[in-house]
Amino acid sequence: MPLLGMEPNEQTARWITLAILLVQAVLTIVSTRVVGLINGTAVGVEVVIVILLVILLPIAIAMNGTGSFSNLTSRGTAVADADYFKVGGGLMLAMLMGLSTLVGFDAAANVAEEAKDPFRSVPRAIVGSVIAAGVLGLLFLIALTVAIPDV
Image (tube, rainbow, N blue to C red; front, top):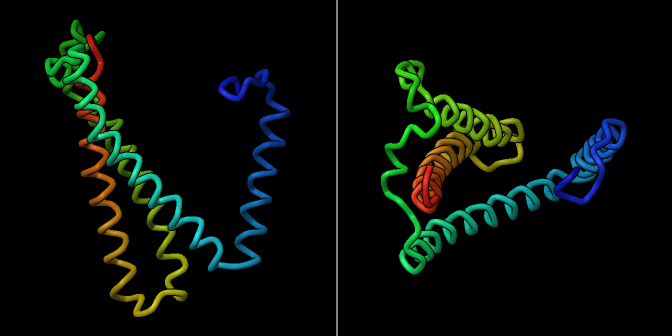
């Protein structure tokens, strides 16, 4: 809410959540085709934005000269913690991101009856989506990490 210039208020957050759920429910009830169009457009825009960021961040780093490749191996504020990597460190966050991506794209399986040849196309779409999200996400995180002047 602060990002939108609104005062944090739990009651307002509840009303916003209910409104969004209502819009989603209405869209789903009205037409699966509309939901598919919105979802496909959103995924396409997301992929284009990530690709642009992966390309433009290194260019900005090269022009600005403030990035640091040492950030890729830095432990930041956890430098004094000898057991940081013992439980996975940043890997745990990456796993959560992968899990949410898998769950998000797994939603495609729920509408498999709308697909042509669902036994073939839906698994391919899910696996392809997760691989694309993983590769693009990794490249984006590397570019973003290097773009930070100092961890």
